[in-house]
Picture 1 (tube, rainbow, N blue to C red):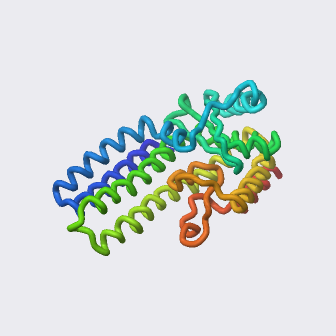
Picture 2: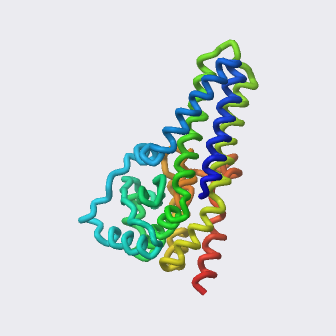
Picture 3: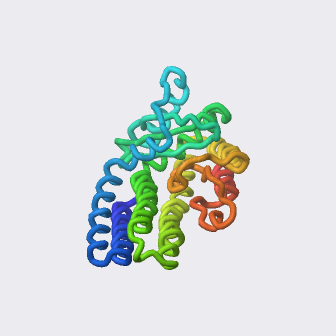
Length: 270
């Protein structure tokens, strides 16, 4: 992900904070929005990866217990031409994974308990290759920043909603509970859809595309059968959206159709 897109994301969300602040608090609210945006831009740039790991209570992967995954990550990172990422473990039964870190040198790949236990080595390798591809392609900084800022938009909206009774009206609810979350969701969708195809392609080039295709099929099935619980602002970071995508949420999917991803990977294998 280019620096230009990262700066565009920061600028867009700053403008959104300013607009919300001005509507609810005039010039004073706009200044508060600007200060809030400045703080959030700083924190999300430097600490968004730690924030996401904290949300899911991620712990460093036990290198002795999971030697095969450590070796796998080292081999794949070498093939991709990036430093070996730090590996983290989420105590979650649903198979899934995500990558984070503001640069390849700070790369992190987090895998769930379900991924380690329910997928075979070839499938796990495909997933890790996909996540290392995100690191190589420099997607992880913008993904983590989008997740953190999307959560901040909702938080800021609640501050104004519950702190300013005079300005509370139907439009307030519309702005805070419909427009702002949708804006954040559209940002995540724009970031994620094209980058998932790119990460699939890069991952398939350093591992077995059929292993990744099989992993996507199993992870997608598990997500439908037993959706994860967590912060939906992070949905775009996972290899497959782990949360329920029914109803209105399904209209704003942060991932391309898994069937199309699998079709492309099988085409690469041929």
